[in-house]
Image 1 (cartoon, helix red, strand yellow):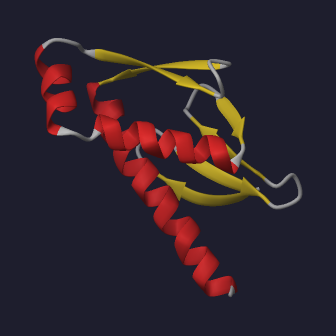
Image 2: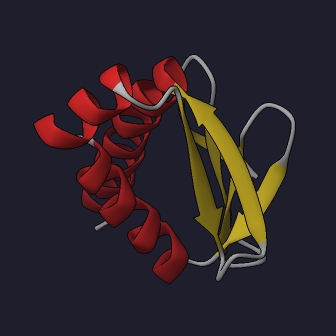
Amino acid sequence: MELIFSSTYYSSYQSSTERCYYIDFGHKMVKISFCQLLSLRYKAKQMSSFEYIDDLLNHNDTVLLSLCDKEHLILLDTLMVLDFVDFMKGTFAMIELNAMLVS
C-alpha cells in the first residue's frame, strides 16, 4: 500500500495489487473502491457548505458518517469534520497529480 495523503486525523492509501483504496480513520481502517471514494468526496463537499458548518457549530457537535452502503459508521466531532473536508480535497488532489505524472 502506498500513502496517498495524510491529515491530522486521517490517512489514505492506494493498493495497486488489490485495485482499491484504504482510509485510516485512526481507530478503523476501511477498504473502499474508487466509486465509494467518489461518494465520500460528495459527502465532504456537502459538509463544507456554510449552512452545514453553521448548523454543526450551533446545534450539533457530532456527525454520523456512513460508508460503503452503511457497512461502516464513523462518528465525527466538529474538528474531525473540518479535517475530513480538507482530507478529501487533498486525497483527490494527490490522485490527480499521480495520474498526471504516470501519463
